[in-house]
Amino acid sequence: MSMLALGPELTIAQAATVREALLQALQAGAGDLALDLSGVIDFDSAGVQLLLATRRSLQAQGRALVLHQPSAAVRDALQCLGLRQLLPAAHGAHE
Image (cartoon, rainbow, N blue to C red; front, side):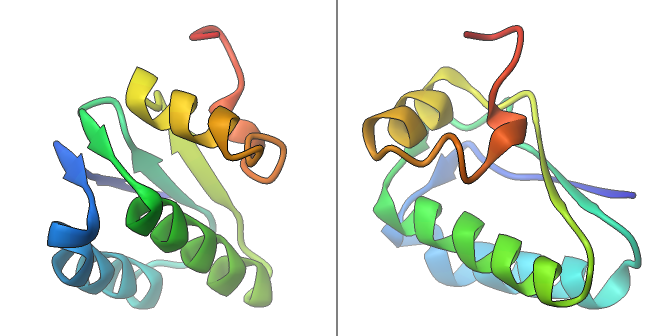
């Protein structure tokens, strides 16, 4: 499993840069991809879209997306949007 740390912002302003980092991680690794989201302090719908697109791409390859220590900003946004079930690794001790 490869690990990629993202943050401190996952917003529309950083979407292109984060997308490139995610594409490189998808191409470089085999197996599941873990995203360290512990340092994310600003997270908007563009960040959600990036996570969902990454998850979809990984699933198409038989791989999984794992969220590692999602910050409160990430957990709150996923809960608000009703997406926590789509990203089950967002559940855990931080609730």
